[in-house]
Image 1 (cartoon, rainbow, N blue to C red):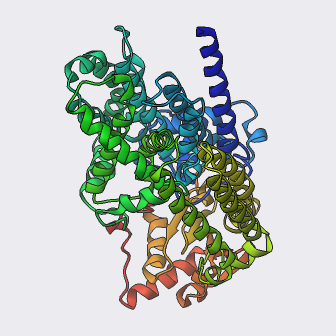
Image 2: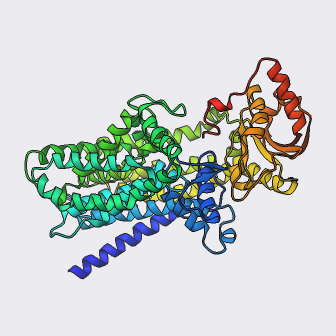
Length: 601
């Protein structure tokens, strides 16, 4: 019996693994980095690998204290692998692997947890797979797990930690709870104190709902465990504080943690209910089942607060506390971003599986939920059939021909075909009252996302990023005398990543022109791979076509070296730049770069 169960467990995890590889790994390095944030992460990780400085994150000649170092260390590790430039020509595999690996490991943990601890009324082989796919097929997870930022790594490390905490509480015996605290330390090294706060809120709210909470608390061994977490996560903070002092404290703790929570940063102001809105989109196209799963879990929550129940069946209650903790914490935060919802998606996937269990037998809820969900699918299909209307309203200055390119590439036709087939199959399975309709549609969605997302990624890459890669190559071919490099107007960190040069970013305003002239004399900086000659007679300027039409820029004498997409490469004599800057100063304009955080992305 034990051998049979072990075999089923292995088969379940192999199925989950194959699905994860399809979603997260296929074509991972087939496109370049996507501006604006991923190139900053990738450049920092690559800089650690190539410079040998694994302590202090740096990018474009400046400190980068927005995130702790674990994401940079992992990226740097992959950049350090032999022949990296051959098997990772764009540099995107090395930069994206930490995100993809974190998501696939969390996907396996979700599946294994539900296999080993089936919830009330569940004896189905499919439920662990449904829960894992519920996580992996979230639109947000699909996007961020293939993006070179730290959000997916936080979701993975924190999610694994929280699941391990629950598994320990659900287990018999007195095994130490070391691994959960280790992964919590990794989560703190990924995103900072927010990881500990979310874990604390989740576990505390859950324990409050349990009658035997003292026994459960003892099981996770908080005193010893907290020490393990501190030993893993805190040393880097201490070393960085000793080395860099006030700049690190003000930037990391002051700006990127305290100020982000208490004040609006980078214009990311949203209403209090923002994440209720985000929750709808993060679970598409199966959002109704998330709300049904929450409702079922809430009934279990009320029951567990009154009676001592079978603890191994409290995973849904735990997931409800998990989801609510993320929702409440980030709803209170002044700065709100869609990516902040990612740590809640593992809990959402378990609640979706709770709905799957509850709807095994056709009933009124089955009828209502699937009717509502089919209407959602029908609405999506209809939107693609009327795509000519909304495509014309897309106005992206970096991709001016996006609408026509989507149509000519055949992506819109494929989307129409897929979603109409998806809706038709849902109707057929619903009419047959299939118990596993949810699973069948997940498999079709798994195939469909590979069918649709790959050409979308390649189209976006060729339209937005290929011009920047080409102009970076032109810069390397035409640069003379270690000229300084500037980018005016649209700011793209990928220019620094691909050109490997210090880049001065300024807006296309008159003040931006004065700033550039001023900074080339005062804000001189260099890094391990580029030492610009600030005394050289000329500089290179990448300027988009909208900025180049501004009179104060077009009036400066320049040599046009090339053009790719909307970007031009100019060579400008420093004397001409300085003379025009003096003219603007005499006209009443002045520099303002000292009054703002330079190149804040």
